[in-house]
Length: 466
Ligand SMILES: Cc1cc2nc3c(=O)[nH]c(=O)nc-3n(C[C@H](O)[C@H](O)[C@H](O)COP(=O)(O)OP(=O)(O)OC[C@H]3O[C@@H](n4cnc5c(N)ncnc54)[C@H](O)[C@@H]3O)c2cc1C
Image 1 (tube, rainbow, N blue to C red):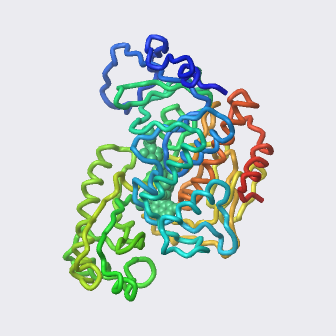
Image 2: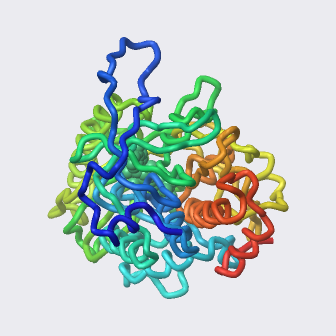
Image 3: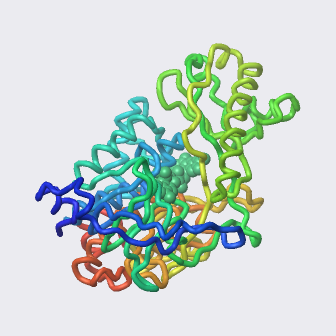
C-alpha cells in the first residue's frame, strides 16, 4: 500500500500545492440551534492520502497506529496536542490500573509491551508488579514516541480534527484538520476514532449515548497535578493520603475544617519518582464536550491543586512543609464522554456474566468504577474477566470507520470499567489490525472483516483471548 504522500515524496513533488486537489467541506461541525455563518464556499486543500488515519494519540490511538503500520498500512496518527499518551501523559493520570486479574496478566500484546517499557521509568516499582504501577509521564511519552515511530506510522502533532467529509451516506472520504497551516484535508481508506470523546464518529453522523444517568450526566472530571520535594522519610512511614478506604487521610480533616472549600476529599496519590507525588484529585462536574465548561474547569482545577497543597502543608507539615506544586495537567482529566453505538453494545450484564464472545478481541477485568454515581462499585473475584467483542469497535452505519479506546460501544455501567488505559490499549491494537484487514480483504468495510483471521493475528501477537 503506497500513500499519496510517500508516492509524491518519491517524485519530489511534496510542497507543489498545485498538484494536490482541493475539496469542499461538507460537514463543518456546529451546534444546530445556534446562528451559523457560511465559509464563502471555502475549499480545503488535500494534504495527502493514507491507508489508515488514526485520530487521537492517547493509549488507544498509539496502539491502533502501531498495529496498522506493523501490518503494512501507510498510517497517519493525528494528535491535537504535542505529545502522545493522552490522559496517561498530558492528563497526568498517575497509575496504570491492574494489568492482572489477580492470577495472570489479562491485557497483553502491545499493551503488555508498552506496560513493560513504561515500568522502566519508575525504578521504585518492583519487577513482578502488575497492579497499580505508577507512571512517569515524561518517560511514558517517549515510550509512545519510540514505539509509534518505529512501527513506521507518521505522527502529526498540534493538529485537531474539526470536520468530516463524506463520500456517501455510509463512507468517509476525508477529515478536515486545523493546524498552523489553517484547514487541511486528509484522505484515507479507513479511519480510526481514538479521540476518547468520539469526535470523528459523532461528526460523521454515528449515533452515540453519554453519561451515567438518564439525564446524561458525565462522570466527574479531575485536573491531575504533581507535588515535588515532599519529605520521603515522613511519607514512607505515614502514607495515608488516599481518600478511598479508611478515614486516615488528612484530606478528610481538611474537608471537615471548612477552611479549604476547594478540597473535596477525592484523592488517589501516587509516588511517581523521588520526592515526587502525583495527585489524581478533586472532582468537577463538567460537560466534557463543551469548550467553555472545559476552559472553566482548567482554571478551577489549577485553583484546586493549590488548595490541596495548602491543606497538606498545614495539616501534614512533616511531609509537605517544603513541598511545591510543580505541574498541573495540560489537559482536563476527562473520565466520561460520548460512547459511539456499534454493532454490539457491551453492557453491565455482560460484565456480571463474565461473558465470552465468539468475536472477542481482548478481555477486561477492571471493576465498575463510576465517579459521581452513588451506586457501590462492583468488583470481580480473582481470575474473573469478560470479553470485548469486535462489534463494539464498528460504529453502526459507517463502512470505513472504527472506534478504539474509551469511546467504543458500551453502556453507561460497563463503561465505568472499559474506560481504563490497559483496556484502551487492547481495543486500539485490535482496531489497527482490523483496519488493515478491511483494506486488504473487505474493500474497506470494517463490518466485513473476517473475525477469525483478526483473532488469530491478535493471538499471534500475544493477546489474551478465550
Ligand atoms: C482523572 C482520571 C484518572 C484516571 N485514572 C486512571 C488510572 O489510574 N489508570 C488507568 O489505567 N486509567 C485511568 N483513567 C482512564 C484513562 O486514563 C482514560 O480513559 C484513557 O486514557 C482513555 O484512552 P483513549 O486513548 O481512549 O483516550 P485519551 O487518553 O483521552 O486520548 C485521546 C487523545 O485524542 C486527542 N484528541 C481528542 N480530540 C481530538 C481531536 N478532535 N483531534 C485530534 N486529537 C484529538 C487528545 O488530545 C488525546 O491525546 C483515568 C482517567 C481520568 C480522567
